Image (cartoon, rainbow, N blue to C red; front, side):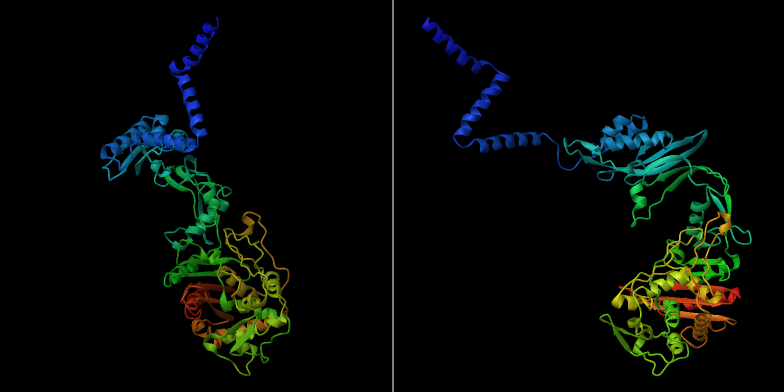
Length: 562
């Protein structure tokens, strides 16, 4: 009996050793446990895994792709796409999920059908191809053709050749997050006209491209027009909201034209044409002309058509800011046109040493002389007598600037005069520091002096959409206003603006400015002036002195307008 039990026990103990499969794994595990007990298990396990990984890696293709691999992978993808087999086409890329979304949208959202894809000659890993198809939307069809390209790479997990998926493979204008959409063009087109009813086009007035875009955005849905049908790239929301990006939707194909609504502007065809001619003579120049009595904008032009500096620029205005600062000093009894006023070579405030152009000084001079010659220290020397927010309040309350509430009819920047202290506050008095303006703002400053009160500039009459125009909370006293007109008239006749304003007759006034900008060899040249019921301002970036650069542009418009 005992012998039979021992034999049975021996049989049970030896049976797992001869059974394969699952039991063998368990036996291996037991062996690992014994080995580890004697102190070398972890290292042995690492070696085992490494060896296994190395063996597996040997099976994954690597190295440069052959010509056959590239062309085969490209043809697999293009054939599946052309046949409408979205899953198969997406599987032939390295990002099947994104490719599926884009390829599905190509048909459902962009409404592109009957696609024919023709591969071109391979160059390395890149394969160009042409696309021919039809865009079909609500019974309207139009052919679509374009060229694109793809790149073949090795898959990261298996090393097999696949298409490197990018939105640009679908269409070269697509970026990450963009989509192709066919439908109504969102905002109906407009026909913008001048004050006389003539159509405003970029063919006639090259500067107005961005202005016309702004008018369509603002009034397209309310001007009575009807949207057209188009295939367009709709940019990702992240790109549109980025401050550093200028991304905007792009029309690729127009299936049907919309019916434009009409938007009437205040622009004068004669003065707009003249403004276009003037800025074309000076690189990086911008100008605005307006009517002080009403606020109507009569002309706007920029030498560069990529950004509307005239309306949306944010630049230090230099000494043209002294018009506003002078009203502050006179209001506070710190200056008077015909009274003596200091203009030393230097004046130190807040740890900064300020000086005049070429370090000039005016001994025993008047404030009028300092204004006409644009003496910096004459203004900086009054900083100790001012509160940090005095200039900000003057700009906002009298000139309507810096409150972000202008509504001119298209996008604009309303100027900025932030509250600053010490040296920065002093620098603001002469249009440096944190002060920022554009020609629209500075034309409005001259208009306020000419008319006696702030009237918000506008390009489209507020009666068109019942919008509320910005207002100033107070006006200058009769005494201060009279002195400012005297200062600006004297500068136009005998000061830094005299050369540019030569031949501009009648009730005139002007102020020049030069604004230093870090990294620029030459300062930005500014000029603001009025003549009768006209006011204008201009800037030439990196132009130098305002009287020599922006001055002739502004003066020519004032002459013509008169």
